[in-house]
Length: 72
Image 1 (cartoon, rainbow, N blue to C red):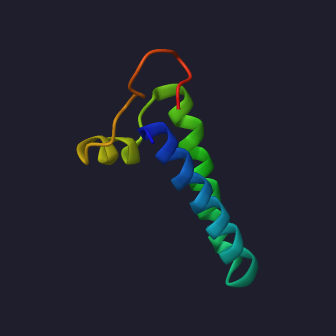
Image 2: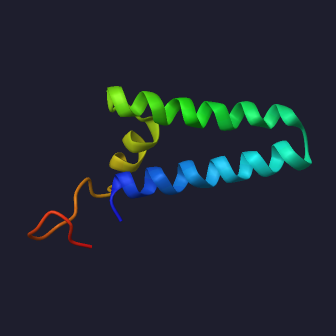
């Protein structure tokens, strides 16, 4: 998996977890959901993502290896 795949996995997991916490623990957890959504929104424009920077330093590849645009 490449960096963008991991960013989507983390964002999706954080959203689902915070929605569950907001439902069963305290509604203030919905603010965390909003934070993740806002971060994804700004990433679309600025391409700045702290998680992506961390993953890059950990050695996660930025692009898929091989020929072709959509190789898995």
